[in-house]
Image (cartoon, rainbow, N blue to C red; front, side):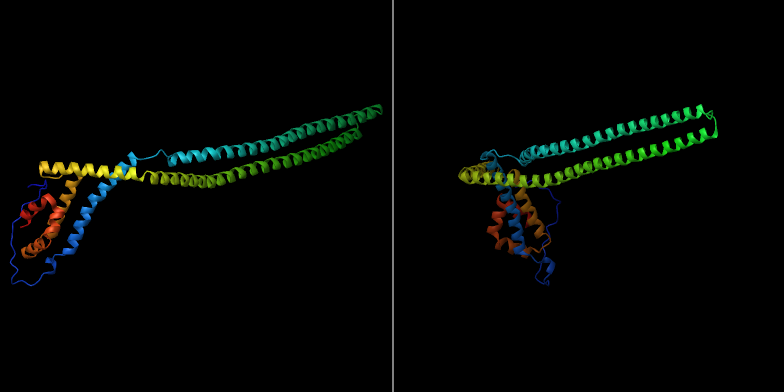
Length: 304
């Protein structure tokens, strides 16, 4: 029977070992071969169980929130809290900085008024001095020029002092504004850090609660789940059996697995002397029939 595999034709050489010394490379590692065959066989059983488990999960499953939904819930809860915190912090900072900005504006107005009043005072003083000097016929004298220079010098000094005081006050107010803004930024960064920590903690707690619900649900529906698991396996095994009876061959994943066993065993025996192969086939006849199934006879024909 063809099992759907193609390989190059090779000469069926029989090796006479009666007068040959043992060749270590020609030794059959029987236990290893049987162990490898079992591993290959177990792959099909594991795949079948996985598909049956997936089917049971689908058929008998409660509606539980996903990890993405849990993350959304946690964010929504924290966003409202931190949103309110951020709002209050921003409002408080704006209130303080706006009050300081108002003081800066007031200081600018006071400075302008003082400078205007100072200029008027010195202009009036010069007018009074000029009037007095004019009455004496000295309006163009050196005394008049000296008096004017002294008044201008005093005015410049007083104006500079006014400006110094104004600048000092405004700089102090600006430093306070910068301090409040820096504190606001630091608080926001701290909020981000604590938000991330609390978010991770909240998600972990929500996942734990969800997983406990899933576990409780699965326990209470274990019998239903087992029934679905068994149903899937029974139906696949039944379909396989029917197909095998009708066609004399395997199908699907089962066929691939049996072909893999067949190919592995051919490879393991390749190059070994006929006597050892015959003894191996006879010694493990029952095991090989089980592992090769419908392909056992074809294997014997090919290997002998």
